[in-house]
Length: 197
Image (cartoon, rainbow, N blue to C red):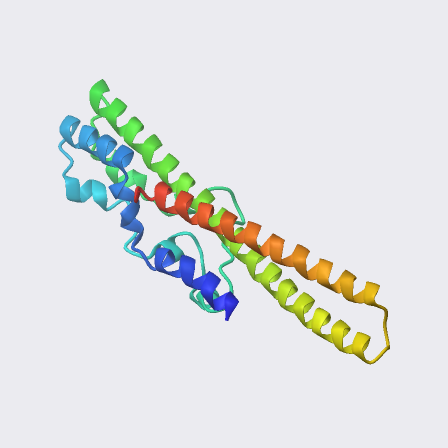
C-alpha cells in the first residue's frame, strides 16, 4: 500500500551503519588532520561512532520501521550523547596546541555532521508521516466522490454536491503531489547530509 511505499523510501537509510557519517568529506578532512597531528590511529578515531545502524543511533525503534518512521527526539542532538569523545581526547597531548586544535576541530565537525543527519532524518520522518496522512485523505475523498455520484444518480443529492466532492478530491490529490515532491527533496537532503551525493 501507499504507507509501505513511503516507509520503503527511508528504511534503507535507517538500516545503514552509523559509521557512514565518517565518510562525509568534512569529517574525513578533520579526521586526517587529527591523525596527522597526534599519535592516534585512523582505527581509534573511527571508533567514535557506535557499531549500530543509523536507526538505532538516532533512536528509531525497530518496530517503527514496520508502521511509521517517527524519530525519537526528546532532546536536541540526542545522538551526540552516544559519541565517546573522552577516549579520543585521552590520546591528545593537551600541552601541544596543534593537537588540541586538531581535536577540537574534529570534534566540532563530527557534532555538526551528526546534527545535520539528525535534522534531515527528523524532517524526512515528519514529511513521511504527513504523506501517509494525505494519501489516506485522498483515498477517502475518492470514496466520497464515488458515493456522491451514486447518490446523485439515485436522486438523493444535487449535482452541486457531486462537484463539491470532486473539488475535495482534486485538492487532496494536489496536496499529495506537493507532499511527494517534498518527500523526494527531503530524501535528497538526507543523503547529502550523509555525504552521499
